[in-house]
Length: 200
Image 1: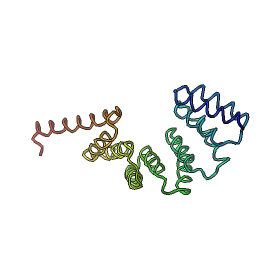
Image 2: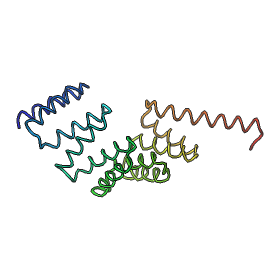
Image 3: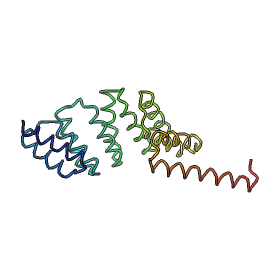
Image 4: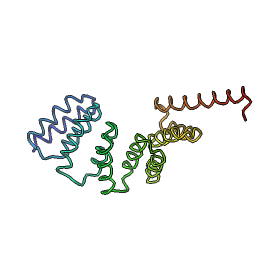
């Protein structure tokens, strides 16, 4: 057990330095000493997710819930990964499992919002983002998601407001800046078109 703890600690240090491959190597060694430790699988899942290796992340998250079947955070993360992979049936199953265990988990409502955004159910997406906000989330990502939902609904004023709110929380987010610039550009183009064609 001590060997496993030392390897987990070493993996954490490598992770903090951005050396993901060394972190993974240490965690895999730790499994040889403590194969039933859910924290090792959880850490592996997080690293693989950051590396964009979704299938490996999911494989390790599944190991966690085999050991800890009530881990609502892991079900939420799995649901989000399945949403990203557009495997919507598995996404919804895992999101609902997380929600059933802890309906007040702030992050799950954000992930459900993302799910509905991807499936084109924009009103439900907005409702889910608002639920996350009402539970105390101050994440810029909630306002970005809400802004995108309003954009797809054609409600550009509300979209702009949400994107500006997102930028006020995270001023350096290039994705939000680009989205806001496009919306503002479209609004200016529409004003010019209306003026030139005398449309009130």
